[in-house]
Image 1 (cartoon, rainbow, N blue to C red):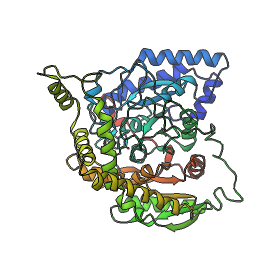
Image 2: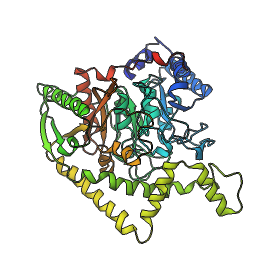
Image 3: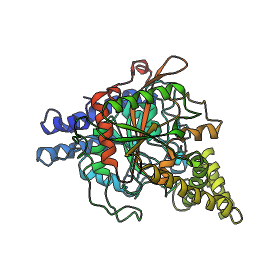
Image 4: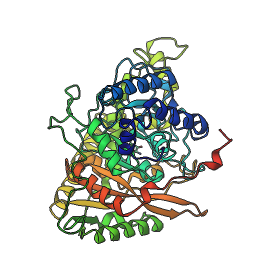
Length: 499
Ligand code: GLN
C-alpha cells in the first residue's frame, strides 16, 4: 500500500477497500518507527491529522471524492498552515504558530487531502543538504550517512522512505529537483507564477516557486492539479485558465510514444564538474528516449556558466530584504535581554538566524548598498536576462531540454558544510531555469555507484518551455512506462530498532 501510486490509493479509497483513517494510520506508524532516525518531519500533530482523515472518510461516504481526497501528504515547513507550528527550519520561527493557511494548504484542504506533518528543510530554504536546518540534518533513505539534498530534504526523505504518499517542496535555485535527484523521486518546479506563493515564507521572491515531490510523473500531475491556479493574493500569480496536468500523460503520438519529440542537450551540462558515473546514467536515459522516438539536438546555453554567480547576487539581495521582517518585534525569536531597541534587534537577529542565513543577509545587503548596486545587483539583473534569452533561442530548436539534475549523487553528511562554494555548485544545472522562470523536473534515471560501493539514485533533468508542464509530465511518464527506476525503494531495515 505504501508503494501505491496516488491514483491507486484514490481508487482503493473510493472502492472503500481502505479508509483514509487506516491509510493515514499506516503512514503515522511508519513515521513513529523511522522518523526519529531519519528526521524528515519537524512537526507532527496526530490529532489534527486524524481529524482531517476522519473528515475525508465522511466526504468519501457521501460520494464527494476527488483524486486526492483522503490521501496523506507531507507539507514542507515553509508553508503556513493555520494552527500548525511553521518554522521554515529556523530558530527564528521555532515557536511560531501560523495564524492562516498558505494558498496551497487551502487547496489541499479543499479537496480533502490529509496533512501528515511539516517537513524538515534548510533554514529559510538556503542550502543543498538540509544541514542548515536548526532542527538538524535529515538522513537520505538510500544511504544513511548521506544527505538527502536540500532545501526540500525532509520532503524528499519522507517520500523516499514512504513516510507519506507525496509531498510539497519549493525551488528557488534547485530545491525540488536536487533533493528529488538525490533521493530517487520525481519532482517538478513549475513555471514561475503558476503556483501561488501566498503563505509560503519568502526567500527570494522573484525565484521562489512551489511544486510537487512524488514517486512518479503521474503522481506529480495529480498534485499539480491541486496546487496550480490563480490566486489574487499573490501579485505574481498568473491568471490562466485552470489546466488538467494529467491530460497529456498518455498522449498518443504517430507510431512511437514520443515520436518526433526534439530533445535538446546543452553541451554546457555535460562538461567539467559532472561526475562521470552520473554522466553515464544520463547518457543511458537519453538513449532510452531515442528508442521512444525522440530526436536529439545539440544546443548551447552560452551564459549558463554565469548562473551561479548571478544567483548568489540576486537571491541574497532579495533575501536580505525579505528577512528584514524578523526583527523580534512582531513575531519570531526575541532576545531575552537587551538594553535598548537597537540592541533588541541586533541580539534577536544574531540569536535567531544560523550562519548560512547571516552570510546571505550580509552579501545581499552589500550588493544592494549605494555604490555597489550598479556593479553587482544591476549587472546581475542584466546577465539574468541573457541567461533567459539563451533558453528562448534553444527552444527554437527543441521541445524539451535534458541533462543531469545534479552534478553528483548524494554526498556524505558533513562533506561540504565548511565549503559554501562547493555546496552552491550542487545547483549548477538547476539555477538557470529559476533565473529564466522556466519549469524543470527531475526524474529517476538509474543508480550510480559511490566510492564506497553504494548504489545511489541519479535524476534526469527535463526543462520545458513556459507553461509546458503537461508536456514535460508526458515526456517523463512515457519514460516511466518503459523503465522501473522510479519504483525502486530503499532498504530501511538497517534503521530498524535504532528509532
Ligand atoms: N541551494 C540553493 C540555495 O542554497 C537553492 C535553494 C532553493 O532552491 N531554495 O540557495
